[in-house]
Image (tube, rainbow, N blue to C red; front, top):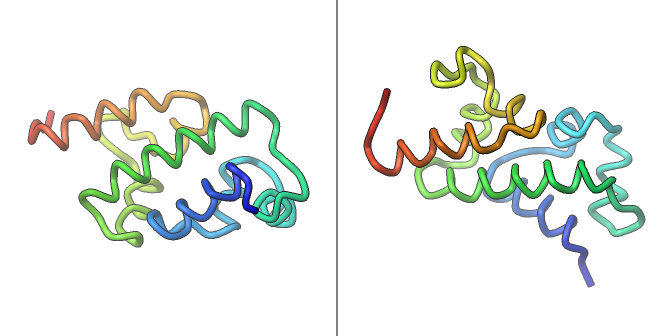
Length: 112
């Protein structure tokens, strides 16, 4: 039986094209730690679980518009609506709402 975090990681890989190394870099842990999370041998700290949950939500939302490789590129590219910051950094810093606002504007066809 899989874990919730294992499910998040599976979705990040399948929908968003993120590899274990990408998640490890975002969560500031080793690839081995991410592997343990995916198999249920360990669980991330609660703050890291929030980051993974937010990241998964963002990736699922972007999946309505982009292919996995495009989502990965979108997450790591500098974005003008984040003052040149990267969406992945905003999510990692607990600023997911800023990224979700950009996606809301994308859905509404509004580009600032």
